[in-house]
Image 1 (cartoon, one colour):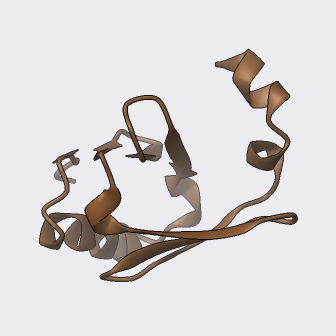
Image 2 (cartoon, helix red, strand yellow):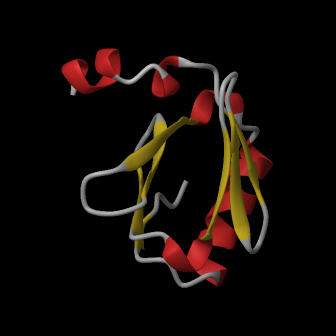
Length: 91
C-alpha cells in the first residue's frame, strides 16, 4: 500500500470531494473527475475512513475527520439510497 501511495502523485495531492445523490466529484491540484454511484463497487466505513471502491482493487480513501456528524449521516443516506453494496457504521 505504501509503495502504491508514493508511486502515484495524484493520491498524494489534497483532494476535495463533493457528494450528490447521483455522483461523486473529485478535484485535486492537477486533476478533476466524476463518477456515478451506480458504478461504485462497494463502500466500507470504519472509525476514521470512508473507503469507496471503484472496483475490487481501486478505492478512494476519504478521512472522516473533515466531516461533521450531520455530513456523515447524510453521506450514509446517499449510499443507502443508491443501493450501493456497503458496510456502514451505526453510530
